[in-house]
Length: 135
Image (cartoon, rainbow, N blue to C red; front, top):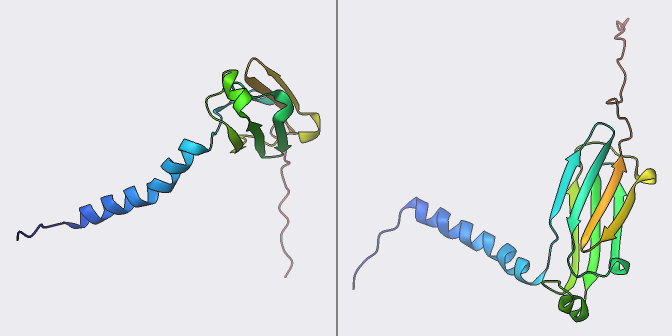
């Protein structure tokens, strides 16, 4: 019988692989669309890849600091060009505060585009005067 020596790095490597396993397994079954964000002076633009997904099966939610895309693909969608099928949800943080009420979304040829005007294109906020506390 031979003994194998393991150093502390082996344990860390094993734990990293073990912790990463659920994410690798989930990504095989749960599709997550790619999201590209672009910040302009007065708006934030999002481009979401949803190949083969029927636009009527998409739900887009915009909050002041986040964008969530939910959808469902069926076997029929997969035959039209989608890679996987099932339900998906993707939430991303936005680089600026946006006005959710004025946001718009369009979908064409498997690409969802979301235009979100900034709430305060000039940066918002105001400078405060600092008063001396009398106490």
